[in-house]
Length: 271
Image (tube, rainbow, N blue to C red; front, side, top):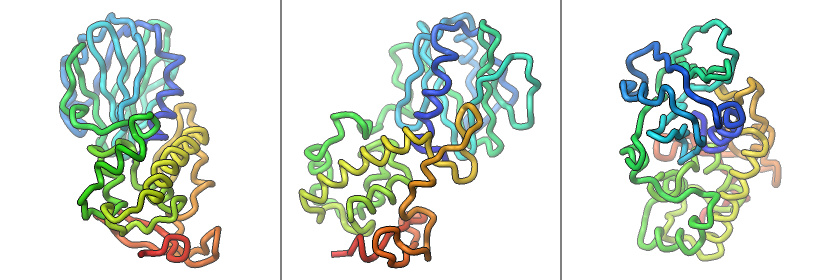
């Protein structure tokens, strides 16, 4: 599934082509993705695109009257193409612009979503999200307050969007490795130095991944079709049974909260 860096990479890729353009038409070829596609999306036709924002893993295309809210799901992708290019299999939504370009949404598994929010309306999917990890709001003081008396293991805790958004499975494993914290550590038992390291590494890992264009494992590609290159930077994720790049111990793997989790027993001792 595309995570925060992949979604941010998509935002950066489509923004120069969309911002300032007028939406000429919206073509919807399926009634339902993860949720039904609302008819209200058509209210955006004729509107000028003011900005393209990201909130958690959602992209928001803002106009004076409302916003399209896009989630890429497990296999969704966005391409900016010439309007004349033929539709391919699984091309479910076209946002056609007055400059002859089209923002085309492809999603083989249909787990993504296109939603609508009027100006000033906080859509339900955005209403209960925690702070963005790359902002000053997400800091050690905030994280310490959230962890008080909590027994949840740290891997699941940092993946909770009500705590902090966008730290998905890949980047949670990588951040914990860099912070030298075992993923099964109860979050309430983290020391202040560990919290400081973890918050810092979450920010660093995500920022590096964005610079690298995200992580291509199976489905993700950038808007220009190129793969994300952060996979070349992975220390533990997807490396079970291989030697740790730091200490040569074998990387471990176990499901935590139904998600595959990877760590090094030597670099991330459980205390």
